[in-house]
Structures are given as structure tokens and as C-alpha cells.
Image (cartoon, rainbow, N blue to C red; front, side):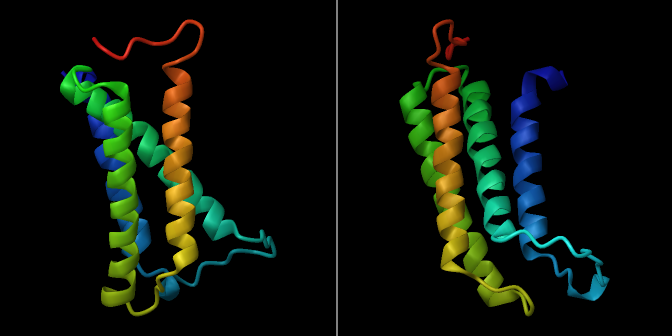
Length: 135
């Protein structure tokens, strides 16, 4: 039963995970990050999170529609969804959190990550021996 909804569950779980990390306050936790200082680590994280968002989103839409939506239509829909979701999260950070801040750089990293996820999907389904989009 769960196998039938695997990608949908992964996608929903990933969206919940991103939402929680984006809106939860970590300032009261006194996390020791050590001396490791990676430049632009937050932007890299945003990029990776939205790459996974777009990749799992496409697989979820494919699963839910049994491939009846074409690959291009699905990629466009997920790309728009990812960009809008990323903007909404940044607006929520600005309006409802006290210690999180919205940044245009985060929106840019989210958008570039979504494009990377879409590119990865396109690559997976267009290789010499591609996976079949339709079931």
C-alpha cells in the first residue's frame, strides 16, 4: 500500500521538513556549531533543499497522475510551485518569526535549486535508456 504512494509521502515529508526548519526558532537552543565556518552555507542548504523539493515533487506528480501529465507540464508545474513556496516561506519568516529574516538571496538560492532539481529530472528521464514517464 505504501509503495503506491512512496514518492508522494516523500514529497509531503520533505515539504513539512523544509517548513519546520524554515519557521522554527533555533536561537533558544544554544547550538554549538563549532569552529567550522563555510561561506554561504545557508545558501548552499537552500539550493540543496529546493533541488530535492523539485526532484521529489516531479516524481510525486508523476505518481499521482500515473504519468498522464507530460514530463514538460509536470516540470513546469513543480518549478512554479517551488518558486511560489520559497517566496511564501520567506514572507512568513519576515512576518511571523521574530528571529528569522527573509533574504532575497534565499529566494534566489531556492529558485536555482528548483531549476537544478528540474534539470536532474530531465536528465534522468532523457538518458540513452531513460526511465519511462508513463506507467
